[in-house]
Amino acid sequence: MNIHELLGPTAAATIVCLIIALVMFFIELFTPGVGLAGVSGLLSLIAVIVMQLGWGQPRVAMYIIAISLLIIILGLIWVIRSLQRGRLSRSFLVLKERVDGTSVPDVAAAKMEMVGRTGIAITTLRPAGIAEIDGKRVDVTTAGGFIAKGETITVLKADSMQILVATGTADETDA
Image 1 (cartoon, rainbow, N blue to C red):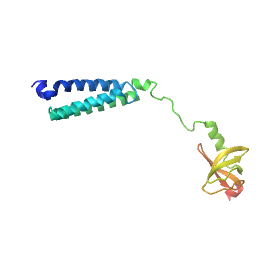
Image 2: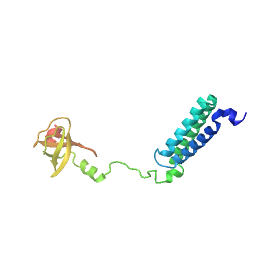
Image 3: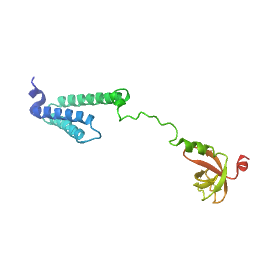
């Protein structure tokens, strides 16, 4: 059985489109984003499958689909392994530095020192607003209640994202 009998009347077009699809997918591997190469490769592969389903052998179309999926899966495995341990892992595309904790550690440490301190609500806290603690204006959040402007507040908890306050002084909140 020759190639013309196997692929039907669209043998030449099928082979050309299949080669174009493979070349375009290979080019797409090394260019960023989903660009013209990837789209044209996908359209060429769809054309091969449509030609074989419509005018050629449906069995050949299924083989082409299976082989294409196998090549795509193997390509993805290769890229993922290369990003983890291979040549791509040493490229500028992979972030090597590890970021732990807050991006501004000095600010986080300063906030932690505020726990137990008292201040004044500069704005109405419903539940978020601005308070003055140790002469500094800071964004604060209440534990859920409404605190009027000018009331005394105490810092209950501070983390990198927010300062949690309640109404009253430190002695009143402990009781």
